[in-house]
Image (cartoon, rainbow, N blue to C red; front, side, top):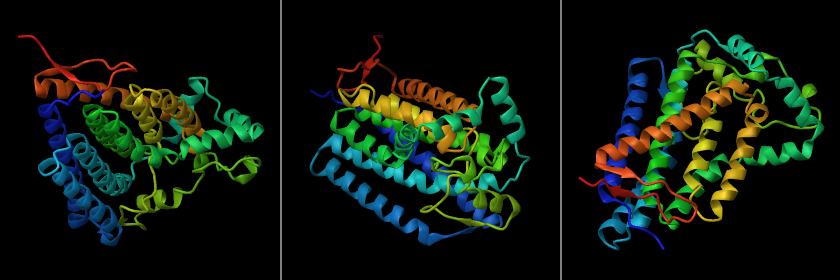
Length: 325
């Protein structure tokens, strides 16, 4: 059984999401017009085409077929694709600020917290099957981002889907902002690691994003792309942050919630080695994600004049209930 979503709260959430997407796109356009950047428009055509198709289908199921759940899923998918397409070049603009690297401080913070990154790498080398399992979870990022829209819509969690979408946007923007002020190349580059240091495993990220990261910092790369953009943010870890958001969003869905929890705990555990992240990157990412989730819930409650009811594993939706006057 599903519960109807609160129309006012859903409309508020959608408006805020589109405003954030439009504002992000505006910043990227301004950076291209006033700065040394060049937008590679060809990298945007696929996200733009898919987004327009999804919005058109959402309109059809809103105005013609009257299927609110499907219309909500389609618009959320369009928002996800559109935001990813403009957030990626925004992260490139942020990296080009080229503020001093924080790797020394982040590595020192790991040591003060008692985390030994090389010991964790050695443990993965000693257990390649475990690493393959964690690497699979780490690489499920894109698949989960797509599946979460379908699962939450099908399970009747329309409003929770919007909470996830806004939390994703807020988390990403905060992460990009922090990375601008506290840029880092990540553990692999900082420690000058190579395949010699991981003879039994092949971590997912390694030093692959570093040419783009340093090219943005020294000015040799000034192309802004959507499709094919590299993940260049080290601190805070966006991968760990979204792992927690996936977990929170899917937790109330019967059966799937438990599976999602296991998968995303594995994703977060994989982040240091497979994402070339300091442990404090992971902690910071988790903190931003949790604060964003709570902030979005409370903000939507205030905007709608309602409050979010806690969702348990057997509830069909995290619904808004009227506060008695």
